Image (cartoon, rainbow, N blue to C red):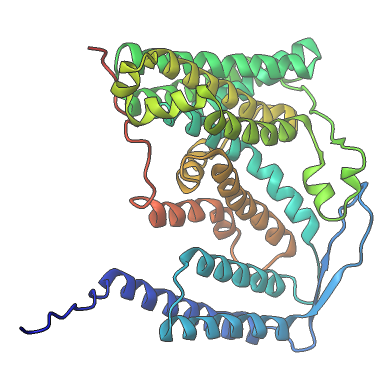
Length: 423
């Protein structure tokens, strides 16, 4: 009898193609850094990274100075070597490759931009968290809504109108905390409208979200022109929440100024991230929410009130959007400007998708967008030879790149966007 032979499984074409693409990309970026960044600066230039924040309580530490050209060449060589290894052998973790690529490119870019000068790295990192705050809050709105099966793209309108009502209430009452409460209630009210349209009347959830955005832009534009511009000092001058340093923790070098010297809204964002993660994954309510978002009919047969779960989560998400709206006025500049949210609600949805519909993932993704936003501001201060228009586009370009890379790979809750009809 002939011996049976077991043939080896064929190599996956997609895996081989991904290996080649990543290898070539790493080599290309390494060569780009070598010739564009490294060769364009003087060999005698140095870059100094300041690791202390001005007026901070943290213990001061020495700045770090590196030879600009040599440091860029080393980083470029690292990418080229990893790219060559990827082409020859292969590294399975695309996340690790993306992380190394991003780290080397960003550091080389900063060294090139600040060659011959000092760059306040601590200030940029602190600004990253602050600028990521409204994006993270918008992402949390999306997470809690979509985990229960309701798509909410009306976050932008909720942020915008909450920002306006917050500043009006705080200015009239001379009380920032009352302004924050009004913003939270405003967000909850807008979300209630969205919830009723989507859950009760089963309106298309995308259409409802667009309507919320249009309503938010229209109302804020009307109140801005009719009341805030003519009576700015009486209605549009609230002031902002003060920075609250946390004792002991704020003295930790580097970490302290970033996480423990912020205003109330930044702290609320951090608390909400971890609180939502705990509620979603470690409580019965979170289990019911995830069940409703994945298979509402099965949840209903087990006695879960699908409508109640969806109403509560969508409205709670709107209240979180209210906190995000208050950031723009009470936590940032103390006044309302037309369309001041600048699309951050939509960027928050991109962070939610990139974070795979998890609170912590959404927060970490928001830091990427916050970093891009902070970086373009710092680079304008350094007067790098890049047109300011391109620098202003940086957060939105990052959004497009991330969405192009993750859409189709990240899996939303199975019943996301589908209205439920109880039989």
